Length: 146
Image (cartoon, rainbow, N blue to C red; front, top):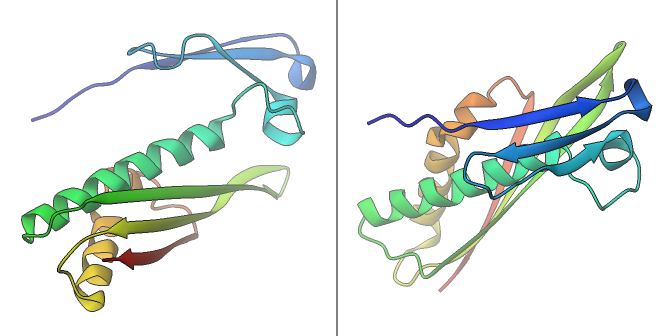
């Protein structure tokens, strides 16, 4: 089973003064603005690539974790995940040097050890984690609620 998904970006203007839009095939993002201020400044009206990578990673991990729990015989009542993506200066440019995943889940009947094992396995097996393997630091803090 394979699936191709498509997103696009449009940019106008020069460097820091330019502005762009991001769109997705599904329409979830339709010409959503982004620019230097929404990436490096305090403009919260637009998005930025790191925020989108974080959203994608959090969504992918949450699904991978729920599927792993289901396969192991546990029902995930609630799975909340955040992904904090850091863009840092590196040489003459920038690089994503850290992703911090935080999982908060409600799973009846699972013990802490098995929960942590499934969370770490989902982090390792999540397609976005694999795609982002070049990021030097990727951590996971997982909290279980019963």
